[in-house]
Image 1 (cartoon, rainbow, N blue to C red):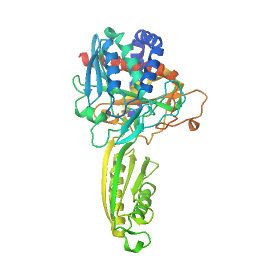
Image 2: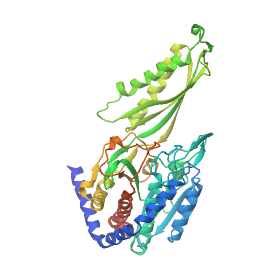
Image 3: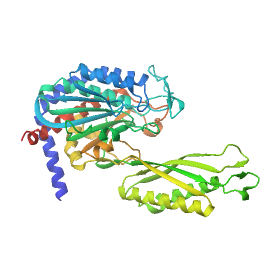
Image 4: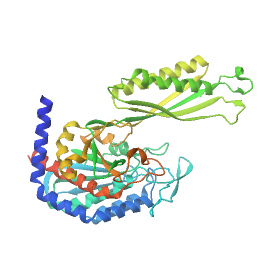
Length: 438
């Protein structure tokens, strides 16, 4: 009952704020409409000239130049290539952060569009194609559009907006720090101290015009693991003289698959343990001495995460020992759970509904994909939403997924993204300006 009363109260406050902001929102919506083609043009430029994680040098220069042209205070070189913009409104109020990620992926593009990427780069010592195969080009363009809209009403803004353009969301190259974790470490949420943060992600499987959201755990935490197995080398014709790391690894892989299926209550939360890489040997008639495998762990519950880590260590060590081999296990944290503060989500839901239409705001299932936006949410309340980028009439299961060469986004959804980020900012400020001014 208390939860229902609180949710209703937050919704009422949000509706009141939207009413108070109606003239300003009308003005900013018109501005968003006026620059829609510009936002699309910005996205196409980023798409045609992508850069990999921690190497977003030209991307950062373009962002910084745009923000400076709007009269926004700019900081560069944050977390290596990140850009921060600070817009101080004409009235006192809270500090709202808005975030977009900047990096592309080591993927060769196959989409037939005039601005397709033909860029080649280097990733962990390998020559690779480079493509914005997850929509970060869209995120940057939308946030740059949002900055332009908000800068046009600077004197009416009740607070400060901090625009965070974050590098290396996909993870920095081996041996380097990067991403949201490094930004937080360097103090991006301070000076001025951020009260709340909003972010969005384009979705190639959500229809244009719609926005998906989920309170609490929206995306999984992500951990990576490496397992090194040491056995004994032998001729392939004499396997009894070996301690075979390949057979040992096969047993370990099957053992790892029982962790989720036999230990996780999947009615409560999802979890994943996947082995994605196995490397061993040099030719077919030699049983190798060493093997290395790597994989990922995804969880939506911190307790489940701890249990899975314990089980991996137990299974790997015991199976290796039973085979006469030894095993070295290394698990590294990549992201936390993308956790949408439930009170903030309830507070801002009417703002999203007013922007996109109530029928276009969809309560979605949690995803086992991961986002390092979670590191910002670990420090301040945050809301992360998913913006439709699938052409109308398409079927989600028949469209190319993220991180693939055929990934495609319908740009007609960008205008809604600009309006959503703008309205979330202004409505939150309207609801919280009086608290700050006191």
